[in-house]
Length: 380
Image (cartoon, rainbow, N blue to C red; front, side):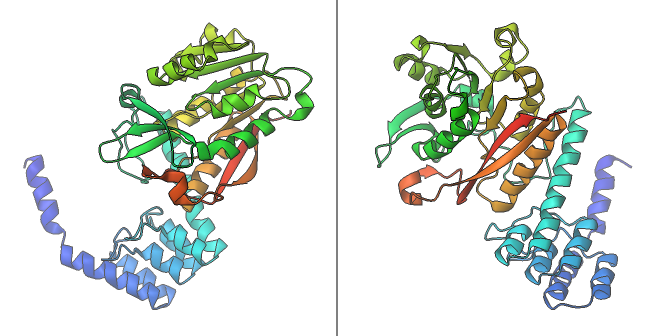
């Protein structure tokens, strides 16, 4: 029998109507708060935990809605999809969060963290690149917003928004997305304040920044009480490099511009010869969490010593509270693995109305609070 014959036989064995009926029956049993043995019996009979009804509601959504923490844990242990979204783009975690049910929310969030940690471990032990993840925030993005090579070959547009703030825009097929926008200034100001505290003002620090964008964070570094004695900027995009050249960044005292991706320099003498940095910041565009995690591994070789600090633009998953929380916790765990402890500060980013902040661009940060990370090498 050929493979196609086997697949055809398997497909014939699946009764779509029966699966749909069982899936709906399970969801309704949960919403009607049927006893746990009844729920377990339905699961034992084959009710699919991945099933979502016509509103996109899954069994896990239903369990979160009735605030049954024991049932949420059971469904997760049985393999429920922690990050499926309903027709309103809400996860079960969002439902629990909206009801202020911390126990249900924590079970779901921790399931996401375990899932990503496992995938990260499997990826690190395989020579095959990871092409899929259970962390389904969006489909695989091969546009300039999600593929570094495509992004580097695209054109960027520097302009000003309706509020007179400078923005750097990337044109996609159906919309524009901000590579960096003026509303991020408060985040960058607070980041530099933590990375270069006033107590260090007696001497210029050695600073490394990856990803220039509009130069907001670099401008704050330069405006410190004592400007950096060495300020290395790694930037790969030709339009950004041209923007930097036109504004005199190549001529600033102590500034070194390395033209290329951070992967081109992170293990080279062009970077390591400087002997370590007091402050490191990274904010790249079109790279995913896997790339950020890879950068974490190089920090022990890049930081100058125990008083050195590291931060990054914590914006992954920032259109959904659950995804943002998972990425935040995940980064803390991965930084801990390389010997760095993180302290978090909350920055409010809702002062400006959304319409004013975004204009016609695609939104990439829609949460009211930005969680600012500052990491230092663990004292031994």
